[in-house]
Image (cartoon, rainbow, N blue to C red; front, side, top):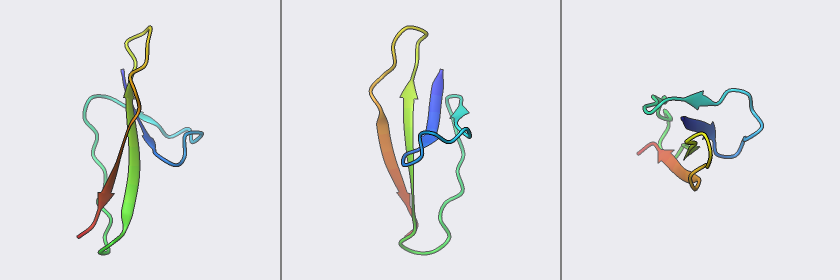
Length: 56
């Protein structure tokens, strides 16, 4: 399974699963959103991958 979270809010119940996710890009120049992804194969979890999406 693929698990997506807000990078700074791991305790939120609104995580998403699935290989592909769509997010709304920040509207104003310089605004950012941070996301995190990990993969669970039923036994082990991958390393956490965090990334930032920034409006230009």
